[in-house]
Amino acid sequence: ICSLSGGYISNAQAQNPAAENSATISAEEHFRRGSITRAIQIWSSDIRNGKEMLRSLYNRSQAYIVLKQYDAALQDLNQLIKLQGVNTPTQVYIIRGIALSEIGRLDEAIADFNQAEKLEPSYLVYSNRGLAYQRSQKYQMALSDLLKSVQLSPTPIAKLNLANVRIQLGQFAEVLTEMNQILEKEKTYRDWE
Image (cartoon, rainbow, N blue to C red; front, side):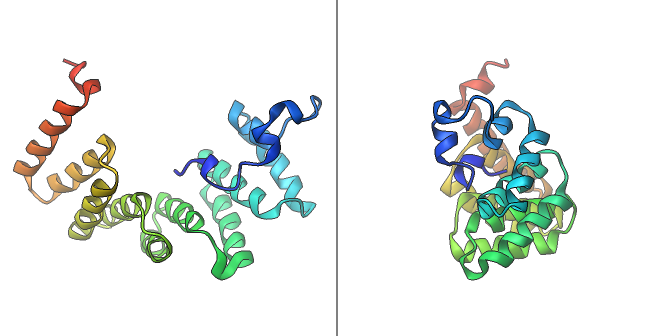
């Protein structure tokens, strides 16, 4: 899931906790402290009152995803897309694609990742779409996207996702080469020995 700080969640109150009234804690602060349900309650109130509607819908959708309440998250994300139309940020399509993937609506998820790619190609688009293709057993398409994700962000998790698809395609020599490269570069894995 994309970082909440990368989306609508940041606001002046969240950036300057000292400025907030000590009697009221922001939804963002509740979220950071792990009080997800309380954060949702505050964002829901803000939405009902028309206060920072877009930010509140986006943040609440992310909180629902954390709680694995994907249908509720999708309602918020669909409303965001309806409200923003052609101005809908890439991040909203990525998050909706993730939620759709989690409930097995893979073709719809892939369509959202395609829309996100049109707006702004990124590691997150290719990684998440690649995983959706993999779950759809479209391994060649998954391989193509996961290769792009590794090129954009060669993290160990991106390389492991790629290796997993290569295993499913029977590309064992490539998997061994890539895994040995990860083990050479990543001290974390060497410490397991």
